[in-house]
Length: 627
Ligand SMILES: Cc1cc2nc3c(=O)[nH]c(=O)nc-3n(C[C@H](O)[C@H](O)[C@H](O)COP(=O)(O)OP(=O)(O)OC[C@H]3O[C@@H](n4cnc5c(N)ncnc54)[C@H](O)[C@@H]3O)c2cc1C
Ligand SMILES: *[C@@H]1O[C@H](CO)[C@@H](O)[C@H](O)[C@H]1NC(C)=O
Ligand SMILES: *[C@@H]1O[C@H](CO)[C@@H](O)[C@H](O)[C@H]1NC(C)=O
Ligand SMILES: *[C@@H]1O[C@H](CO)[C@@H](O)[C@H](O)[C@H]1NC(C)=O
Ligand SMILES: *[C@@H]1O[C@H](CO)[C@@H](O)[C@H](O)[C@H]1NC(C)=O
Ligand SMILES: *[C@@H]1O[C@H](CO)[C@@H](O)[C@H](O)[C@H]1NC(C)=O
Ligand SMILES: *[C@@H]1O[C@H](CO)[C@@H](O)[C@H](O)[C@H]1NC(C)=O
Ligand SMILES: *[C@@H]1O[C@H](CO)[C@@H](O)[C@H](O)[C@H]1NC(C)=O
Ligand SMILES: *[C@@H]1O[C@H](CO)[C@@H](O)[C@H](O)[C@H]1NC(C)=O
Ligand SMILES: *[C@@H]1O[C@H](CO)[C@@H](O)[C@H](O)[C@H]1NC(C)=O
Image (cartoon, rainbow, N blue to C red; front, side):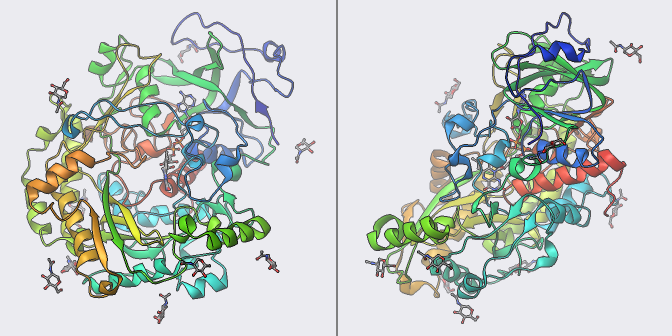
């Protein structure tokens, strides 16, 4: 293991915006037995040892020379809860999560929502549900389109980094054959320390559910989840297939690196970026319960990788953000950057539950909860060989469908979207540049709604008789993440999803729900399984009734916070440019989920890894070398 710097450095910062260098011998006085010292300066200081942060740290230190310090708020944990794949959710334990609730959602009867993000070394990759998916090619081409026609942010420009990001290990031959799993290795790489693996077992109902979509006109069945095409397909799990344990940024990009140029300090909260004028020169942080701040200098760059909720917070605390927000919190504006913390997006989730009363396929996912013989067998094969149903995280197949396939209203809704007064669905007083960026996004979404290259509908197959969650992959509403003026340093930021603030989101979600009803209740291929609708129930029929149901039950988050440090032109409310450099600041980049200008049509983790891999090349070589 390389240096784990877990120490309190008791040094007082006397003035803000002044950077102090500390000689090494000060740190040598620290007490923790295995601790090494934080140097006074590194080439790169990375804020956040999460999914992106550790990926970039690993790549930058590969040369054995470039020095990097990663500062992570969470602890380094070897808990079995993180490693366990079974069920996919054991890492989602409060000890590894921030304690944040959203502000009341005015369009959801003032409900608040828990904002789940990982607070542990590895960040959200340590706690997520391990679904390993990408968006469609159109999702990534959309990012580049905001910069014109020749951006290297495109499907073609990212594909090499998707390949570098993950080490794909195919499912075993038996399960591949039994379940008709298809994959195409050309979409994957085999060098990363982060694995895309597969369980050694699948329920027959999963393959049957895939086949059930053959009755729906227009549904495609791409051969691989990494193809960039929407449709119904199998996808892998963030799992080391040998250990049958979670594979995440810590196991892939920190453990075993043992590089003297790669330092990490955990349980350390970054309070702000140190700026000399408009040049980032270092980072200020507080270790553990210490009451003093420590400054570490960055000789080359500061890299902000604190995720979609905390990266905008740290920028704002450092005087980089919308001047109105900063003024309200009594923070001097160093760079007025109106987009910081705006353009906030996450995937909304709806409950939409159907059950096959006569699904004769056995074993089924239900057996793992109700059939003692099956549970016994599952436990035995897991205990002896780490095989069987307990090697499944949250499942490996789902539908990701374009809007014209699920709704006949696509042209109509697209036209309504184009005709909207786009500023009217954003908060009053939103900066004109942010409005311009939103308008460009909505124009792109209008053509996405009409076409078949962007997925809007997502439902995941369980392998059992019932299915529950439906996801809107491209919400139109935009929220915000701003520092809390009441106590900007002490409190978590104010997280406002502004769910349903664009009224067309309800219209789109209603169409997604109606499609689920048709798929389950009016599908000749599954009639024999006796489907019944449980939620929302057949009393919900009219537009009004669906709207009421959505207001009552919507979750505004699938824990995929993005957009708050958007990579867009500055005149479109962007926060970072195509090199991920923060506008108006020297030597500062953002590398994490917050830079996505729009959500991909899929869970976000694999995309974050690809962004981080690409960013590492932009930082090291000044260009995406593998393109
Ligand atoms: C419960 C849950 C389930 C999910 N399921 C899936 C899934 O199945 N598939 C999928 O693809 N995606 C999933 N996601 C989303 C995915 O994991 C995230 O999009 C991705 O990991 C985010 O990476 P990131 O680098 O942007 O941020 P993170 O990985 O969250 O990293 C940010 C890091 O910065 C640290 N940090 C923050 N503030 C500070 C500070 N002030 N000082 C020091 N450190 C700080 C944090 O502690 C954290 O370690 C899920 C997420 C959650 C929370
Ligand atoms: C939500 O809260 C706001 C502000 O407190 C209040 O004006 C409004 O009436 C509330 N709405 C509901 C449905 O309770
Ligand atoms: C991009 O290409 C489209 C069509 O190919 C063209 O209409 C448009 O002018 C181009 N935009 C820029 C900024 O070059
Ligand atoms: C697998 O595919 C074959 C050929 O298309 C089909 O006959 C069989 O029913 C499928 N099996 C499953 C489990 O879907
Ligand atoms: C999209 O798919 C639908 C359903 O198959 C089809 O009716 C429509 O023509 C397709 N649209 C485009 C633009 O290809
Ligand atoms: C780590 O590196 C040090 C110094 O190069 C070496 O002594 C040690 O054996 C290495 N540890 C591991 C686990 O490789
Ligand atoms: C800030 O930058 C100026 C100009 O480059 C330099 O002269 C000065 O020493 C710097 N101040 C600090 C505290 O680093
Ligand atoms: C329970 O599981 C066993 C083993 O898979 C199976 O043989 C049996 O039919 C199942 N029982 C019921 C009631 O489904
Ligand atoms: C474990 O795997 C070995 C080797 O494949 C096999 O012989 C054994 O039967 C397996 N154990 C169980 C309980 O399935
Ligand atoms: C059910 O499917 C049939 C045949 O495809 C179709 O004619 C009918 O309109 C559908 N009914 C509903 C309620 O969607």
